[in-house]
Image 1 (cartoon, one colour):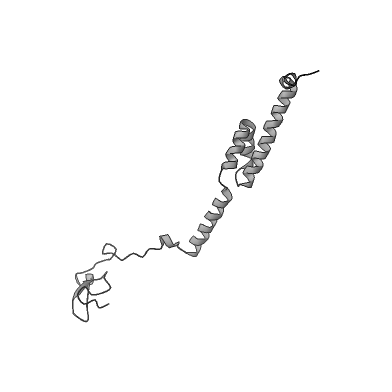
Image 2: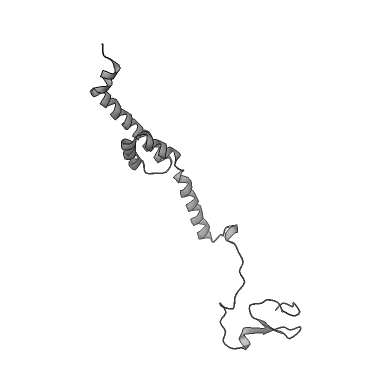
Length: 130
């Protein structure tokens, strides 16, 4: 009668070990493809690393969600839609203004005749708008 250790140390043990790594690599490849990763590369990793590769891809984030988010960003960019956190209003500055002469730098208030910079929309003295 054969003992279990004799059975595993012979050629049958090597066969079981090869089957274990092959089955593990198939599951690793299937899981990686389901998450949007390269199944062939993960099949090879599963052959060499076995259960460690399976655990790694099992704990990896879903790559398909990242692809959907990047596609959504591309659509927003093509439609010229800004997200609320990026939608900030900026005041025009004198650095962006082109100045030809002294009179072009200012506008005169119609109410109080105060000279105000072009970048301001209201008078600094009376508050009247342009």
